[in-house]
Image 1 (cartoon, one colour):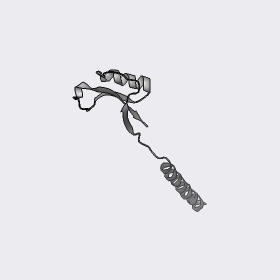
Image 2: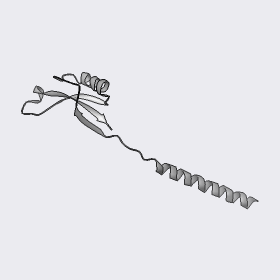
Image 3: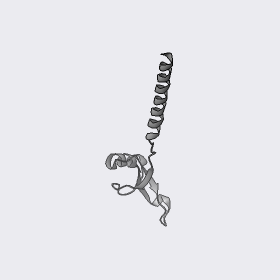
Length: 88
């Protein structure tokens, strides 16, 4: 009888280990990618990043927004556009 209980306990332990092994490898973690694009709703000069951030979040449903200067034959201070960062 004792040998039968020992075999059952060993079998149960192996079955639990197999279940844990299979369940931990069945789920794959995916890291969100961060992408940046121009704002679709912002027009004009972008002077305050906090305003751009709020508009990007509220109106475009993205994670973050900020003012970024662009280098188009003019100094960075001459051109500043709103950019929204999205994650997918």
